[in-house]
Amino acid sequence: MAADPVDDATDSVTVYSDYVCPFCYLGRQSLAEYRETRSEPL
Image 1 (tube, rainbow, N blue to C red):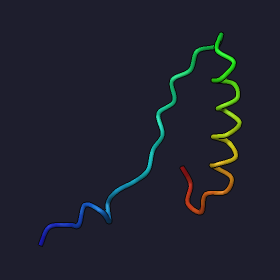
Image 2 (image 1 turned 90 degrees about the horizontal axis):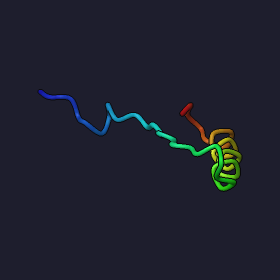
Image 3 (image 1 turned 120 degrees about the vertical axis):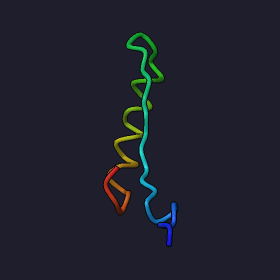
Image 4 (image 1 turned 180 degrees about the vertical axis):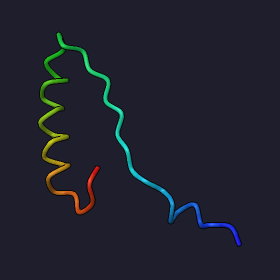
């Protein structure tokens, strides 16, 4: 019997950033807050 792909799924986030863009800096804080409130490590 094959493994259920949902059971093997892992979450990941790929972040592309521009050091000149102020929104990238602001988004970094949002990502950090999300990671702190998440029940599983990201």
